[in-house]
Length: 83
Image 1 (spheres, rainbow, N blue to C red):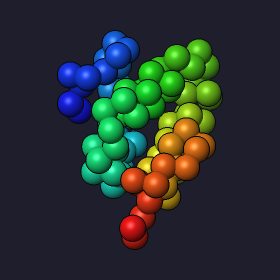
Image 2 (image 1 turned 30 degrees about the horizontal axis):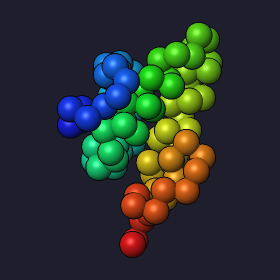
Image 3 (image 1 turned 90 degrees about the vertical axis):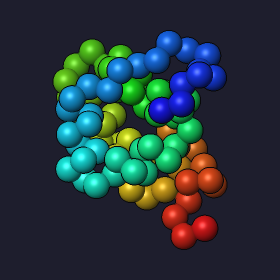
Image 4 (image 1 turned 180 degrees about the horizontal axis):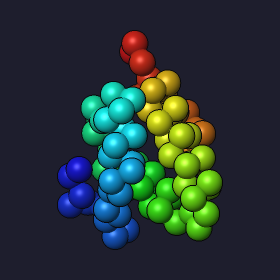
């Protein structure tokens, strides 16, 4: 992540997130996203207080990365598949 332009503190990637990205083969899709999106996803997942909520947020991130064209439930044309 090129975090030199981030306006918020950098969020570390928890091991369970790394493992899920690798297990689903989505690490490259994650790394192709802008640094702010990578950081936002990690912070959003980490801020969940309950493990069930963390899992739900992780699943949503993975699904968005797999689908492409969406970020935090909003359209994101640069990541659309088959562009």
